[in-house]
Image (cartoon, rainbow, N blue to C red; front, top):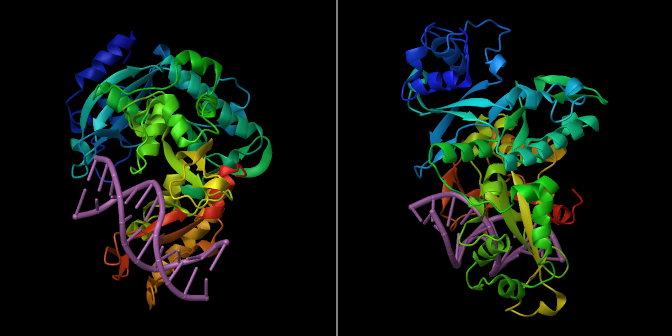
Length: 458
DNA sequence: GCATGATCATGC
DNA sequence: GCATGATCATGC
């Protein structure tokens, strides 16, 4: 079947809105045993009337449109999110290095996408998923500037012979996500003998979520960088420049400067102050467009006069059943650090404030950071492996003078991360896979490791 | 002084 | 009621 215009394709796609996949499953891919092929194939065959063969990409090549069928999920709080990243073409390490952004495989293939969103629902069969909305998507100018930078970062790593160190959190919107069965899918790279994990260009889940909220929820979010600004500077540089305006000032001075009244008794006050520093008032940091699209998470760090934080840095509670059930590449820790960029906003107390209970910290710096792939694959994986072994053998819980101790990975056993309790009190427990109950535990980045991040040694 | 178990405070 | 960021407090 031939399509003459993009409008014609779009019209066809929109005709499917409100229908479910079984309406288009002409070859019974969803009902026959050992069914092959994804929902995308069903749409190609059943809606657009393409005949599939193994080599056929079945996209609208003549019209320069790439078809993508992608899921949306409803969150507990009823908001919508993308369920997954949008996987684009596989990166051919040998070839991609020969291109510029304009001639890159990413840009040639994906500059115009027909995205069909469907609603994923846990309790439904695949065939009953409903198609919600189809949009013809081209990248907004301000996003494209960031995506160009992302492409340069990815290709820069391949050119440096470091394709094996690519990570999805290296970049903002355009990611290099792993593709294929874990570590068995290795590929050669041009400037190194080290085989690298196969990866594909992808639009991050966080980026896709912003599209869902824009096209389906018609939600407006606030951005802090302008398209003009982004033409000249990277998002990282713009961010750093913004924080540099206030470096060396203490919290009171900053609050006077930006007209935001700090309330020292409120722990969240610093976070509100940071929003105001970025020129955004009355908004939560996570609602800022660039941060939510790039999946950037804020962490405030308070350094003592000696340059170290008092404590390690805590994250979410550990999901023990996941730890035992999933391979490392699907684990809570891998996902967190593979997919999240962090913005550490660093404050420090000076010497004179040592004995002062009302001491006020000053802004030292902001550091944008993601965990290097090497550390994810080595230290983080070692911590995960050690903890998993403990879970398999059964956690040893030993009462002590001061509560209950366990043999999960400790801060002395890794240079990067450890497991420690985080609960309301000792009776705030969770069930372990072996049936015992344990005080709720979180994972933490070691204090000295945080120091290294802040000093930009990692 | 640090590691580690315990718990507080806030916001959703 | 719970998750999360933050911090306390004891013992080595």
